[in-house]
Figure 1: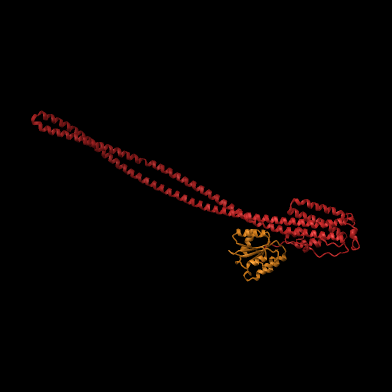
Figure 2 (figure 1 turned 90 degrees about the horizontal axis):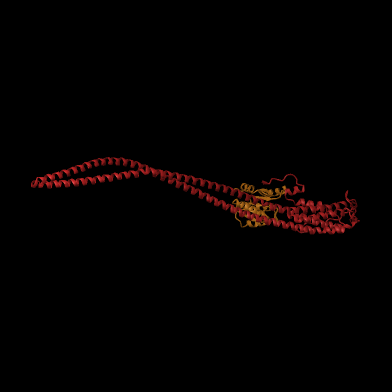
Length: 122
Length: 413
């Protein structure tokens, strides 16, 4: 199964979400920032999906989505933004950048897996 | 975060200070108390309570000092100073000599803010370490639960296999017993047929016995007759010598006939005894049937008990497996709940930044007291910046400025 890449500056979020996905049989790759994610993608196998935080030091989640969409290999990759942000303008920014969906923390594990199955079957 | 990064443009002196300045100071003091108290309750626990109570006491002390007239604040650089000469309704006028002391105390708020910020940072680090430890433990627990469930599944499969083997053994035993019972029934029929033959033989033997008795009687009579012939031959003298020899031969033959008849009779008696013994053995097959019935009943009981034990063990294994599944589900939920640490971290960081700005603002107030500058308002320096820093709907709700409802928690574009 192709891995899901998690991008978050919070070690707790990375560990928590990685555990939830791994328990569901989903392989995971982790990046602690948007820049780290873009760097890892250069030498990485194809992804099933990406789940990224919005607020991160340096490049934010929307900017990461924008950069990802510039890469041919990831133009259609499902990218979910998982964030505490509730501002509608930020949500619109992510949508405009090409994000697939917006999830507000905390998200229940079963809901996360359901959304993942929905946007990235198999 | 360095102070300079947070600092807004320095306020330019304005002629208006007065009551707004005093109110701003009071509000600042109370805000510090409220913010620090909130942070203490949320993160640092009871140990900080004394410090916060101290800050509150300070604000209370500050109140009567500031509401008294302060001539320095109404110097010519502040044309609007008369506003301070009219303290808020119900408050006494500020004491003029208090300004240096107030300024000195206000400057210490940076120190207090720094300590509080360090405390909050420390608390964030501790919760992060604890959350990561919990996640590690939950992962270990989940691995153990999954291992347990795998063992249970293996045990369940083994139990099912053993049950099938046991049932097959019992069925095989039942077939063997049925075959044995059929064999015994066949044997009983054979014995019954043998019994008829034996009875006929016995009857025939009885007829032989009578004939042999007749032969014995004839032999006895012949021997008597030979004896009489011997006597008569002796009586005839020389002429009867030859006849005496014949009579002697006849007597010996009669004796031999009697011996043969006795031997045949003895043989017939032994034959009857053997047949009687054989018929007695044949009667023991009834006891065999009873033993067989008992063994078959015990085997059936054992099979039923075995099936009950297997069913009970299977139910226990199934139930334990279901519990394991539920435990695994709860572990997953608990892992998801660890997101709380990131949410709390962000809120605490926002509180820490606010505390930092409060310290910064206190410094400006102190400078304003000394330099008779205008005062940057709490509204602009703190409240608006706090509003700008919020990311969560809950933060805005606490502040009382949440506009409308939060968007959907999950939205696919």
